[in-house]
Image (cartoon, rainbow, N blue to C red; front, side):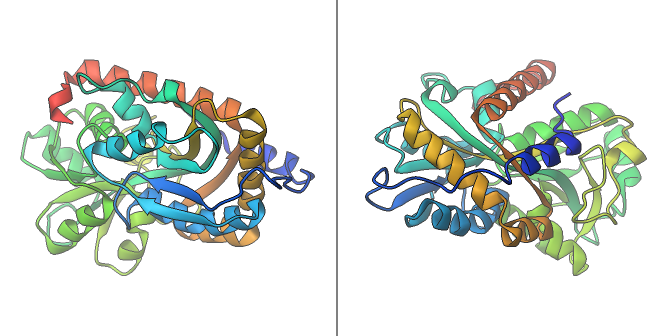
Length: 324
């Protein structure tokens, strides 16, 4: 089970309050590119738009966000690993990086060895949402449909992504599988759930929370073991139909492997400073995220652990690369 205890996260954040000001003079002579390997309006994009302005201010250099979606994040990942290892090109992504590592496409090399962790930015629960007329008013109805082998169309932001694997893990816990429909990102997926084209969708909480609050979508449950502080009214699957179940998504920043240590240190320091900004913390909380603020070593450990868990569901379900 991959968990980031709230106490550990809060303790890490508190220990960083006395961190020195960022010393990045001369390391970044031109604007940086922050590549989000998904289309706009998805969970990673929401995090990036909240985080990057403060990150840029702490670093003392402009940062341009570029959305390069496609192939379950592989297109954007490739753009980063092929970039110069000088700190001017960064990857802002989520645990889909671990998913594509656990289910590689033949002929493509792994991404993780070609990337250097900078910091873990935030964590969040996924949420399963349904159209109000889909006949899925709560988690119990969803579980009943799956167990009865009745068809449920479940949108995910790409097959072979972290969201897809989270849905497969939940389905395994419930004893049935939905019919997964792939989208290029969370934004397009939400559009089809809102229109009733899909029965349901599994998406990062922050991407759907405004629609849930407005009554346009029904939240069946969140995938964290505890209710989200940003949406405490939504029950967990663990407390309703899947005791002990937990899967959380994370958002992190990485650079090309080989980036000089002083450059990585400056990036980490600026990122941690940004995550201490009360405005960033508040904005992330409002979107269902919890600021993490963990450095390269614990982030690298989390990344490797996530790859291992996702590789386990690949074997259990029998997923093949051509399904991603």
